[in-house]
Length: 112
Image 1 (cartoon, rainbow, N blue to C red):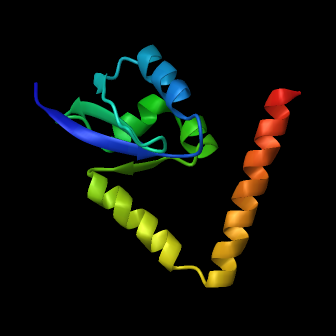
Image 2: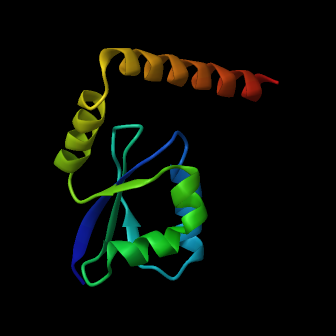
């Protein structure tokens, strides 16, 4: 069996739920390690499709964590560059402000 590498990015803390879902499915996969917090690495059978991989994860998790799937790290990096460069400076500042607010809100919910 040959393996294909798939990278996944998404909202914070998506890895545990994905792993649980994949382990509960019959989908053949191996978990890899990525030093980037916002990027997970998996190997899937080369005969399997990314669509089947997404089905094994489940649509609820794909939408909940806004998961994006990539065939290489370069695709992931390029997607980040496109997202950043497609907004005006004002929009980028607003996005940073919203992310900071969301992060502080999540931290305050965890403390309570």
